Amino acid sequence: METVLLYILGIVVVVIGIALSIGLHEIGHLVPAKLFGVKVAQYMIGFGPTIFSRKKGETEYGVKAIPLGGYISMAGMYPPAKKGGRPRTSGTDASFLEEEYEASGRTSSTGFFQTLVQDARTASADTITAGDEDRVFYKLPIYKRVIIMLGGPFMNLVIAVVLFAVVLSGFGTQQLAVGSVSACVLPVSSTADTCSPSDPEAPGSAAGLKPGDQIIKIASIDYPTWEQVTGVIRTSAGKNVDITVNRAGQTRVLTAVPLLTVRNVLTTQGAVVKDANGKAVTEKVGFLGIGPDVVLARQPLSRVLPTLGTNIGADVHLILNLPQRLVDVAKAAFGTEARDPNGPVSVVGVGRIAGEVTATQTSPLAERFSFLLGLIASLNVALLVFNLVPLLPLDGGHVAGALWEGIRRAFAKLFKRSDPGPVDIAKMVPVTFAVVLVLGAMSVLLIYADIVKPIALQ
Image 1 (spheres, rainbow, N blue to C red):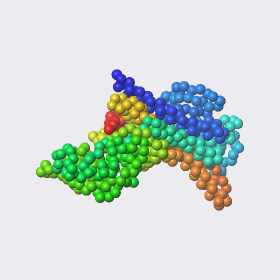
Image 2: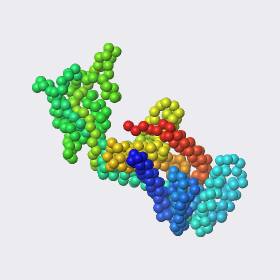
Image 3: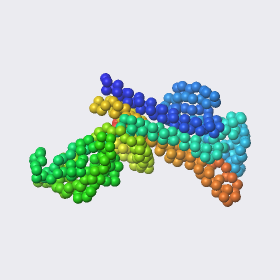
Image 4: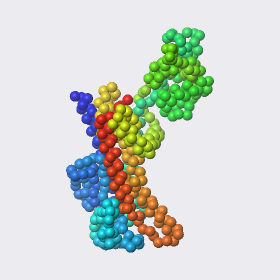
């Protein structure tokens, strides 16, 4: 029963974390929008039917039934269409905007996508009430529009930095350490478990390495994995290798010289590889004589930004390779392949991971809670990176539209042409429609995969 309750608790913590992250993301848009005088009619967390709302001033604040996002409704997100192909002028009232829109193409629509564009313009015009004609988004200076649209991702960045700082410097993270140090070098064929006076001292012992030393750096690799450590050792026989360790809170740089020895070839599971005759396969590699361990250690605040950068890089790589990653997910969901633990997951998958980790009795409760905070931090990095993709309806799409408008106006001014006016991003609504369909299909696939073929925790 306790395991079930912990499983549910893990899901609840992450759900609350996601909801707060979404809410703060939208506050990142809301605050600068209000500061710049834009009329904001709604601030909502979620989509679908409204569960709860309260109006304060001119803005309705509320929560909707489907907690898969959020939005703020700003007046005049899309400019009206040009009348007669000429730029719009400022100072027009809402009714004139609607009349201009009607005259410019409402009745000439002949296709589905044209209807989408026109309906988007109509909906935008409907948000402009009498007396608020100059409190619209599209009339703001370009830099203010960019600030508003980047406010949401910026909030996700701040959340990620704060949570990574708490996890790394408050709770600590698993840190590679020296688990054992051999006193001497024994031949691979030796069955002895003690050293004799004639056995040479192991290079690790000679360098001064001790059990419990946290490995901060080896050669040029900061915070290496054990695989990276062994890779350096095996290829550095007879060479000086600098190893930076943390011993009892003090940083020390030790220099070791791996000894060229004959060692058994091992599989990734640690088993000895044997040839067709059943004899162990050997190879000549560098040997230091140390074994690994993992300890929980607090990291300096200087580790926060590198950790953030690593997460951003991983998410960018994931997005750039998203089509292939989704193909792999589909193969796993409908076939026999295993899920990639570093592949995309849905909110269902995130919930399952959170529940399984929280229900694990082998780790201290503080370590499990730290994992949940790290998971929420990583989700905020994903929201940051994903929202900066320059496609509508994402924040990056609006930023791209504003920057393109700035480029157009700069060239017009440079060549002494008339002001081309706002970029008509309503024309991109069909692209928005396609993006929404793709995101919906992707969500369905990932949710299905997370149910029938969830990622297996190591």
